[in-house]
Image 1 (cartoon, rainbow, N blue to C red):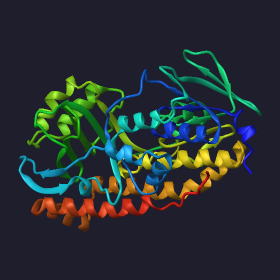
Image 2 (cartoon, rainbow, N blue to C red):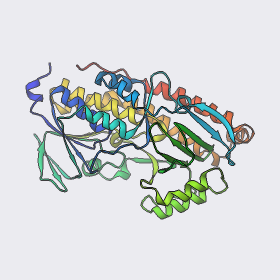
Image 3 (cartoon, helix red, strand yellow):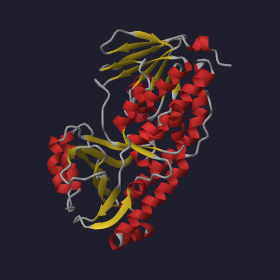
Image 4 (cartoon, helix red, strand yellow):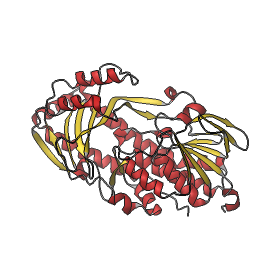
Length: 405
């Protein structure tokens, strides 16, 4: 039986005010814990990129009472137009079909979801504009040193600070031990909505290169998006090289690509990274536990990162409550429940990446795909998207959630 007298005195630091961290804080507070969030950004980001919530994660939103709020604030994407290199329409799809959404699945801008989550925890302490500098673990506590604020003691630390987790670096070691790049690069940045897109996405696709531009409900701007393979490794710390390589890789594609590259240097939020996954044998070390992308990033190629974060937060907090704050029992049970689910969803990302990279393979199946892409590109793209939707839907529902409260 849960010992609420023990729980109410348990202080838990959460690193990261993203979806994983905010959801964790909500559930910990529901059970009577005392969570604190530390976030390196100076404020909660607004807007951002499109993310999906699917399958079992929708149960968590309903348990939190925010499903309708998330649906109301959704992107309301009405459709997608598939184009060729010259910008000629080769196919059209509904917004849900293009985004692999079925049933009650939702799509929302990341910042908008974070704001909804933050609104649910008005009495949780959130420290913006600071970061963890060091973590010292003892038998009965954790001492955390911050870059700006004074050191403080907590009972546990939850690292929910993303793919390039600072918490993981401090406690578990260098990121290179756990990061597995998928051979693709992703680039997204804001541009003026010069095409006057209204809840619409336009995309050019081929094996190895995808370019898109979209604008969702209520957005005065648009997002330019690129996903591609590269012949050589690109320096993730050199923006000049990144932008030069982008232009080289997309040579020969007309449509809106040259215009998007002209707008690129002036974008206020240029994002460039390698598509990668995090694989770890264990997600906890004594009193520190990792969650979401910090522990088991599946990459944007999976379409399941947000749902994994929401479900992981729900399970972690629930197991801590059931175990009355016994972290060894709770962390082990959290991993036991999540491992298979994570493996299935990471497989989605690997499959999608391998399909994108297949243009460099010399076999009969790829030869056929290349031929079909030239003969009927719109139909092939729709087929690949619909096939991916079935896989994502199966993986998104491949976990049965406990009722903790």
